[in-house]
Image: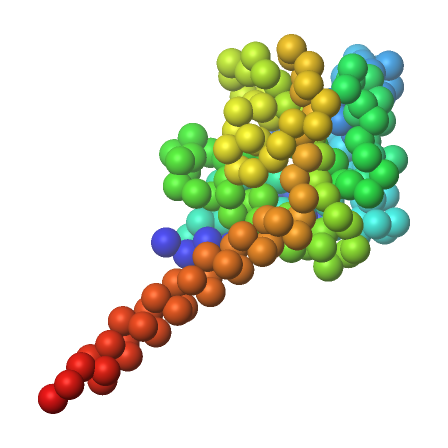
Amino acid sequence: MGRRLVPLTLDNLPDIPKRCRACVFWELDPVSGEAAVRTGRPEVEKEAWISAVLLEWGSCGRVVYVDEVPVGFVLYAPPAYVPRSTAFPTSPVAADAVQLMTAWLMPGYQGQGLGRVMVQTVAKDLMRRGFKAVEAFGDATWKEPACVLPADHLLAVGFKTVRPHPRYPRLRLELRTTISWKEDVELALDRLLGAVQKEPALRPL
């Protein structure tokens, strides 16, 4: 199974689901978002938002491909670009963090570790850009796919609660911890495989 995580651009924007391309939940404040939906312009507003963030900050997402088929995506940006975040009871996102806005995986590809790979890819990208952490608002009562990610899923991939709330806790993932965890695992595997390969030579003849 060949899998790739490619930076989101205007060229591959059509590879994310149509309903997500027409969703401006995070990209606009509640009043502007409702106006965009009412006038039938959410897709235009979404594209304009991504274009502006690309120009000012750089890529704000990744598209996941498995055997060249788009199966998911993740969106993230500094909180200054995410007007809706200020409407949450557990805001604001910390100044040293980028906000993980939303993510989605096609049902047939869930439970295969792709969610964790997505988070690790985002972590590597943001560490290169000088950020210390990723924060997200979770939904503690999540029942079906929505713009706000389930808090349980965020906790499962390494986030910790920094501001509790019965519905919308704010969670944080320290980037250095995420990267070092992955590198520690890879190093341990290298040592284990190295030991296995060397073992026969250590046995007496």
